[in-house]
Image (cartoon, rainbow, N blue to C red):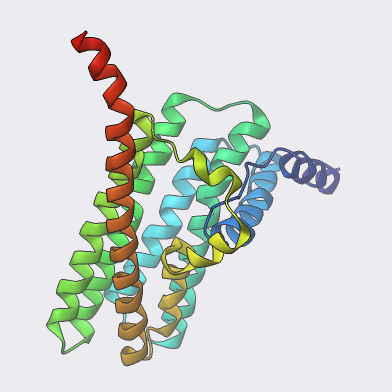
Length: 242
């Protein structure tokens, strides 16, 4: 009976998935399917979407403590990566569970956004602590803090742009190759670099390359969003002035 309920939930969620067009590759083809299965399991266990959100936050927090406080061994790298990816999958699962059970709420959506707003900046803060404790290159600490600032500002800019009306509708028919282009700044890709923690030079190189790519894409995104919002505001301004 439990297995049957689980399969039925997975099937229902699969038929009600949001379009993945324009979404980064890991999020589109790995994280959302994992989140679908986690949501189905949570529904069988009777968990609420908020409980899944909090479980996601706990997985992420445990991973960050491993990265910041323990030496970069292979075991630590594997454990931290697994926890990060589990937290990321559960972050997808809470919304899917809310749709499956019809239990979505503004409070739950708010809680999910609060956790999201904290998760990635805290990841980069944990990396900064890691560099401070286990690296001789203190400029890497500065790079991680810069990455933390960028992730926070970009998250806020995207969320606010959607709130103000520029919701990225042009991505609904984006070609498949766009998902692969976005892979370097996919959160899942960033988390996978943690596997290289036991190899300091490799990890630093991968981390800095992702930082540079993300910075370039964010700059283009800021410019595009500003122009689109400016264009949307002109008719209203003209009407008000008339």
